[in-house]
Image (cartoon, rainbow, N blue to C red; front, side, top):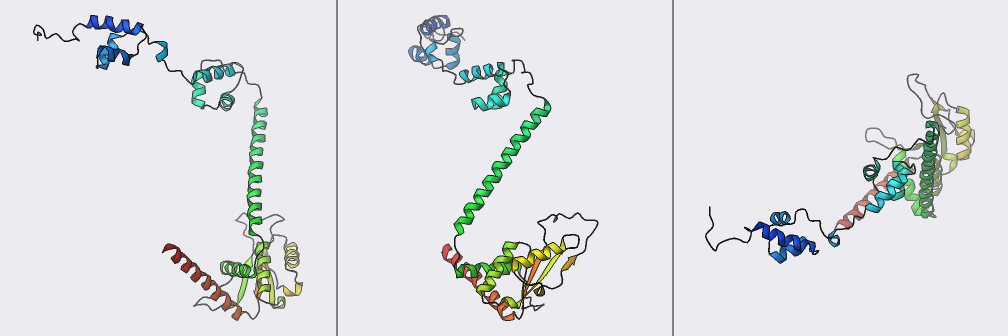
Length: 293
């Protein structure tokens, strides 16, 4: 459709506008400055007007990775691996690959055996550090406990028994105190708790329970020395029959089976333990309810 006389748009004379835009560009103006100067707000048209004209240097943003790229390429020329370049420059592996992939791969400097040995040594060092961290955490937690009051030992003992000891059932009345465990620390703590409650050691009877293929005699000596009891306080050792279809994992010098500790004439003691346990449960409920309200 033909334009009416006097109605010619400023965009009609494209070549004239281009000449002006190019001149402004060569004077060092940015696209925004040219847009504001010529009052052209169509970005597509603005880009066509300055097409082929390079942007002035002052408008170019520096590429922060240019220096890293050059360093990466230099390291690659020196024979460094991707892992070494990544560690040295603190950049991603994908960036390293992009920057140096056109450079020749460095020659292998180690035999596969040497590389394997180095990797194994590194893994062993990681394991050593992890073990040291575990030890430090455990030592700090142990020191944080400090001395136990009689009340604290009493509560610990009640919880210990209710977790590991024999319990009475409505369908099977067993009001007697019997404790079984393989952990010498648990056994020692349980005995200290019985001492706190005034239970005479003469009322204790012991039974070793162990696999028949283990060092039975060694286990009997170990438990006897741990609890400082004469062999007369020990019942006949209970041996677990070996199943040839299974593979035992509880083997080695550290395996000593379990020790059963039974308190004679302990019905009243059992009732006190059960009552104390439910007293702990009730106290926890009340404390929890108080925290919720």
